[in-house]
Amino acid sequence: MERSASRREFLKIAGGVAAGIGLSAVVTVRPASATPAEMQEAIRKVVGSARVTPGKVKIDLPPLIENGNAVPLTVRVDSPMTETDHVRAVHVFTEKNPQPYVITFHLGPRAGRAQVATRMRLADSQNVVAICELSDGSFWSDNASIVVTLAACLEDGI
Amino acid sequence: MASALINVPARAKRGEIIEVKTLISHVMETGFRHTQLGAAIPRNIIRRFVCTYNGTEIFSADLYPAISANPFIVFSTVATESGTLSFQWTGDNGFSVTESAKITVE
Image (cartoon, rainbow over all chains, first blue to last red; front, side, top):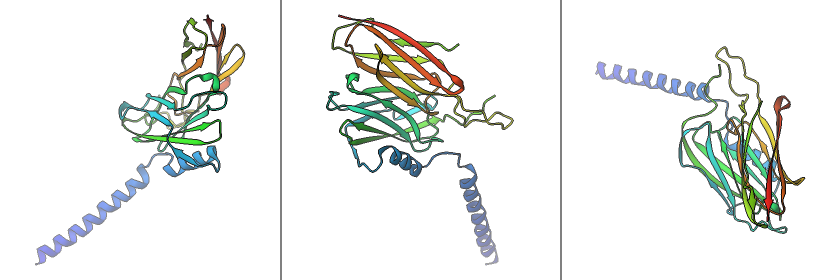
């Protein structure tokens, strides 16, 4: 009886300690990163009060990448790219990088094809969102989730 | 100091869509890193890239620290006339590099 009680006590204390460690780990380990809410706020700043509809844009990102320092990113928009109907801008955002902004491409009817590419840094496995702005003022979005094995931004400099 | 690589087809048919690839050597220091002694490394990035075709702006981009070192940017344009494509990168600490490429449209 006595042994089982002490075992219960032990488990209670151990559980509490473990929970405490877990809790403090959550508080202290969290890096200086943006949150999905910050990303939404950044998107709001770009689109204003306009409605963002999923579709038309396509993000091309590998599903898994070893090195987050250079992740190939391609964004395509389904648009005829004429004087009256073209893509004005493509914005790219991330959820968990220190800053939600990645890049903004400004295109026009002279682009011919709405396809752009670059290489980006990713600090963690996360969602990447692309928003495109068409000449009629509408906004379209797409998102892609990616797993990063070696994160960027964390290594120290010399 | 800084060097840029540009890939533009030398010849194109009128109205053809050509792909332009650009790469420039730059550290793109994010400003979020620290030295081993704990001092913050100041941000040093390219903030803007502009491409003009015979003086008319056809493409530009705003860059943030989330762009990899040695920014690589690919875009396309319609070959309208023979002339020069000019590329300019500007950024922190007065960074500014201009490069150009010639194209013959037939």
